[in-house]
Length: 66
Image (tube, helix red, strand yellow):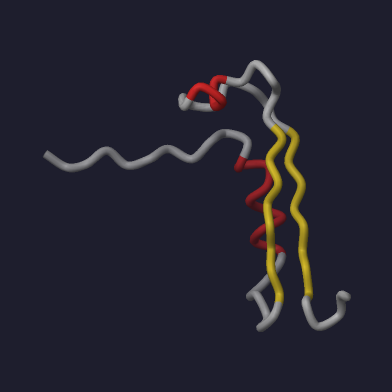
């Protein structure tokens, strides 16, 4: 029996275009996705996300930041 493939959370579909538009990461650069789940989201009980979390893509270029 084949292992079940994980299903990407629905909220990632809104963030994927932003991630793809970042282009290829440059040395010293970091892309970090912040996900803010609701307090009553099932994810806090170890289950699949049941909310529409806020997301924020943070790009950090270590060469230009202090």
